[in-house]
Image (cartoon, rainbow, N blue to C red):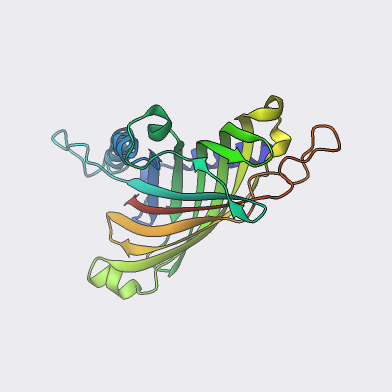
Length: 263
C-alpha cells in the first residue's frame, strides 16, 4: 500500500510541470468508466471535461477567451471474467454489459490517470499510471454456495510506448504506436464471506498490450489487460482444516479502447 501511495504522489507531481516545458512530447488521459455500456458512457463526461480543461490550461500561450473546452480522452472497457472449481466453470453474476440494474451499472468501475512521455526525436517513450478499481460479482461455489464479493483495489503501473515511424509523425502528422505495460493490483478493502477477511484474496501483476495511432493532438489505442494471478487464495483457511478456495482458479481479461490527449 505504501508503494502505491508513493506512485500516486509521483503521478500527481507530474501535473505540476510548467506548460512552458511541454514540447508536444507528453500524453495525458484522466479516465473513468466501467464494463457496463451505459454507465461507462456516462462516466466519459467528467473525464472528458477534465482532459479538455487540462488541454486548455497547458496550451494557454496559444489560447484565447473564445476557446472552448473540447473532449479529450476516455475509454471503453469490456471484461471477460470466469471462475473454475475442480476444473469446472461455476455460475457467476458479473453484471450484464447492457443491463440497467444497479449490479449491472456498477459491477466493475475504474478511474485513474495515465501520464506519458514520448519524445518526437525518439521511437521510445515511457508512461506511468495509477487507478482505483471497484469490482462486484456473485459466485456459486460448490463448497460454500452463492456469495457476493465487493472488492476495492489500487493499481500503480508503468509501461513503454513505441513510435516506430518518426518520419510519418513529422511529415504526415500521424504514426502507428504500440504500448506494453505492467501494473500491480493491490486489494485494500473487501466485503464478502469469512468476516471480510482480506487474506482470502490474492493481489498480483497485470500486463497490458495495445496498438493504435498517434497524432500531434491525440492518440487512440486498442488493447487488452491480462491478470497473471488467481483472485482467490488457495491457502486461505478459517480453522486450519477447511480451505474454501483450495480448488478454485480465476481468469480475467479486459479489452479496451482508449484515447489520450497529446500536448
